[in-house]
Image 1: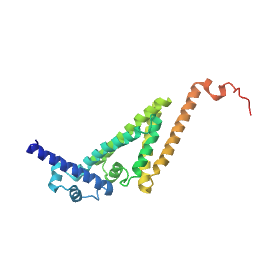
Image 2: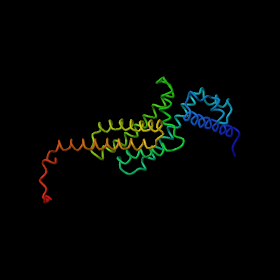
Image 3: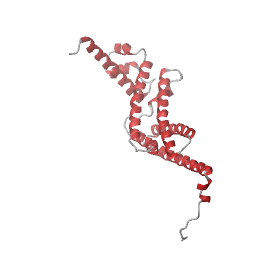
Image 4: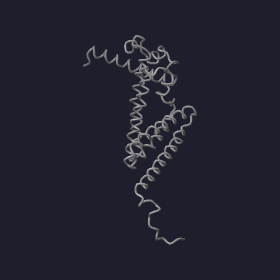
Length: 229
């Protein structure tokens, strides 16, 4: 049997979640500055008092909503990426297929973290900090996949680190283009560019290995015994 204090705590927690849900939905669709506290409270179905019980300001609510979104979005993106195949190359390229699925959804309004950072000037603002931490988490995940790709292809670890930064730019670029153009296939264009980047890295690595081991280069291989046709 639930005691009265536990019932009150459950109700309080429910109000906080509803405020976070409302803030995330409204801000993602319309922006931070265009969304007032009254609109958030109204959509959440809570009392204005509940807002001030849980959050000291609208910015604090926005930061909390973004932090929660970061956790959910990263879990979705990681799971979707790892379903794309077994090799690191398939994971890296599959990231763009995961994004395309998102771009094609009706509620796609770009990257919530880039959107938020664009509205907040101060780099020390809690909202900007959450946005920056999200990109750091995304880069860290991409880095793990680039490290695995480096292990598969004998790529230098420094090149893998550079590749991960380039990959993040391709991901964010695809999101930005899809938002502005309304074209989900922006993900496929970014995927093609990403695949070309991997091919360039692979060719560069092959040339480097050939230079280190001249005996394996095409010039030093024995002539083919096949009869010319």
